[in-house]
Image (cartoon, rainbow, N blue to C red):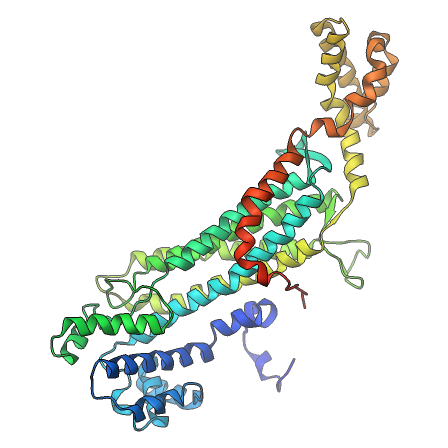
Length: 482
């Protein structure tokens, strides 16, 4: 850790101090926020000048040369005095741009910089998340392909059920992640700019500046929107853009949180069964008391943070519902927390999940042993069908199998022994006609249905195509520092 130690005397969000990537932490930083405010003031001045307001090249050039040299100490002092963050930064910007001072923020309201900057941060936040989600999908698709035909016990109610394959199970995870990718893409593409709308969204101040020329007001809005990198602005706003936009943005992140929680819970369950494990570093300690333990701490972290991500959606839902008329300010403090934290949390769980999926370990022999314990029970229907083909009576065979199964189950449950159903079948002369078929009847690959074919088709049709736009960003690997 750097610094004198003063940073340890106050609370620091672990989302930033412990987990988040540098790019996402910067995206919601004061540096990004306030330099974006200055860029927005520059865009406004440029557009107003182009539309014949009395703004000079010298004023525009002066603003352009001071976009990044923000005096944060002065801004803090101004805000303490003025009790207004936007005006504090207007004054701070004007201090280093004395020539441009008269035209900074001309015709605008605070939400011109505040809301438009938030929309830029949301857009850029999605642009950080989307390649990370694509990489998780890519790593998991490779995993699914590798284990497409490896039989494993399926579980319903976490009780052993019909066999599936390790790769097919991964495709269940992938399907949800692909849905999340589409949801994030849609939310990002549907974001619009607030634009230049004035204090209650009527553009009255700009209409006055342009002496009633409606075309120039519309062109001003269009030009600033384009300079900010958006294709469209919202045609109607109050003082703010509709807070339903925040709901749309954070709901897709909350949905992603549910997906990741499900995947990582499955991994934790499989780790308990010793069938699959997340990566484990050579010198990593699983437990301070139990040296043998290999706890699934990455998956646990994902679940822990995913719960927070899912909970955050309640903030924009409630905020949007209480925005009186053209706006009220009880959204501000809440949004300062809920918007950044949602993106920071999503960023962290995607980075962690990428690390997990890049190093997931499968133990085929353990999986095989678990199948061996349960398969005799699952094979009873096959045994009955084989006996019927050999001339037996279905009902008689069913009763024989039922009695032997109950006896074998008692050995497993009451005595803690192995499943000896097959030994009982072999020892019973009734089953003599099919004894030569037993090994074939118990081949696990005959119990997995079309799972391998489903994996192949799903990856080809549903997964690989959605990754195409991100193919140049696939090489990044994740090393977790903590």
